[in-house]
Length: 243
Image 1 (cartoon, rainbow, N blue to C red):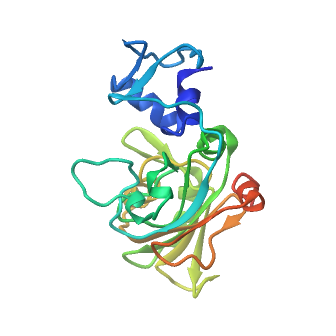
Image 2 (image 1 turned 180 degrees about the vertical axis):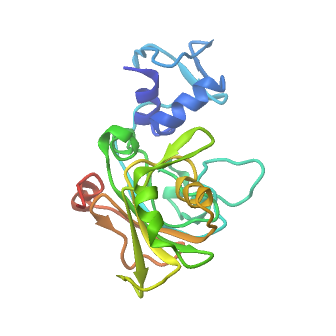
């Protein structure tokens, strides 16, 4: 088993985060620094992450849908900021090795999936899966609808192409042809601060950003800062097409 997959199945982090930890020289196998793609024999090899021994593959998978408030980081441990999304969880979940399945920046809100299921996380976040994420966005001024095609074709920011699948002007929660500063944005990919950077490239500032849907799962009746544990039916929706 590849080291990234092993760490995700142990509930340490997602595969993508595992790569970052390996590159940051935080992972060792039998006392040696780990390499990306390295094979692991779970019955023999001893793996440490950030000085802590990895306990082994998690048998009981947990998937939580959390309504993230502003001001919380999507991080298991941040030395420069006291509040992380895991501080919102009560027992027993705050003692589990859960990680964020796709992130929201500190000033963004809405649907966030917390899990120890590395395979599920990979299916949701990997670009090849093309899982749709939908966001409500409030801009600093009225949106020029002429920019819709530009954003859907893609813009380049710092050498990286940022692209919306759909941009829909909204008023009172419904599509509108009237001038509005509110838009609904659909994304297949999930690059760092993608929506904020994309609008900044065309001259706008994002005042509020809230994710409300992943796949065909729509967040409903979860209070801000609250969570629910998802059952099998809703877990399947996270990777289903919403189009």
